[in-house]
Length: 518
Image (cartoon, rainbow, N blue to C red; front, top):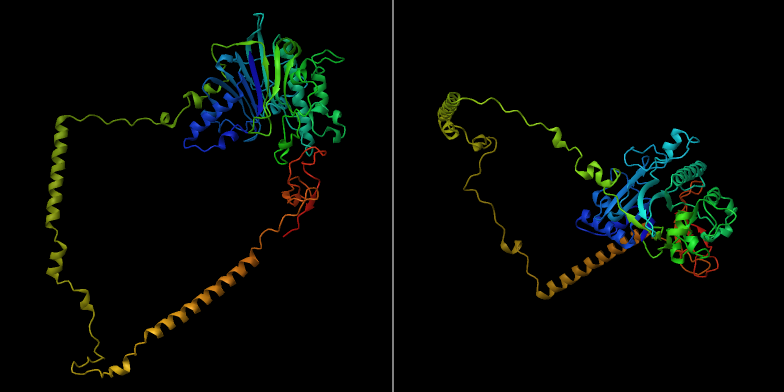
């Protein structure tokens, strides 16, 4: 059996950063190994890794028992990116980054590019610059004992932002390039699996709110999928594309089978999402060798859930990993140049003979003796002071001649003691005095505290209470408009419950209220 799993992980470091560990390197290695172990797949394809080569660490890239392959975004940091982890028992015979072949190294590549004359070199380079495709080619053995080639295309297709029409063009051109490459591999005799985040919900059954989307089936991405795929159910219908949606082949009518939910609206709680992640196989492979296709909605850690399939084939591992394997990167293979290599040891001076050494020793002794004579000849500070009669600091202070000194016989007149001494208080008087002083201080402290309290209450009034939503009479939640436009940055109140079907009374109501500026 060969188990293949795909997961848009929404940042390969996200599930790892949640833990607390004294040794981050060991934590990352253990967490990555735990993720792969829980998915329990021979081949794990990850999308939206959000790492570039300069921040990729060895514990993330090299996991014991696996060989990994990464494709990085070359335009932005922390954006896009895909990775494929293969068990050592499923080591590929070839691996390649990108769809166009421009990133190929001509050593251990997959090949078979098809006719790409409709693309310019600049366009191909742009389509492959965001790290959205990674190919691994494997040798498999069928139940009949026939050895065949299987190419797995791990893709993270672009999202079409409604506010950026150029991204829709970019998405459709990426789709076109993907289809050309996949069909070229099929024509060369290889089985092909396209899996990953295609960023399109194909049918209305794959979307939670398709009925309210205008011209749902007229979307360019859905039309492209119509031409790529055969009709669901593994039955040849009016149209037979080269690939089959494996999940709909085994579960053609299962509703609410979603793989992506909005984190902002909490829609996963009520399973209100869409199915954007697929495992597509060529018709012959799915019909003859696919045993099952599944979703794993119970696996958390991302806004997507893993999807996968099980094939009735066994993998024939390659004897060595392709050159694209991360363990061959200089920073992980121990071949990266270090600063020590740029430092040259200083050359030693000529060796002196014995006579020169003796002369040098005599010269040093003579120098020390001369210094000692000079030090002994110098007068000490105490001697200098005594011989020259150095004055004391007090000698500079003399009594003023304008003020005659007081005669020692002159006495200050003294007053009677009864006029100087205060009569002692009685114990009762002392107690009363302390009580009065304590009450006065307490009153002053109380007044000060009241003044300070009133002042800070006037300055820091605190947030006003949240309004209650109209549907459930529950406190709302405040949100901020992030969409560019006249209301960018404005705050508003809405129902705090998660988004769900309109017919579900436990889902969010339609309450909306703008927040008054403070």
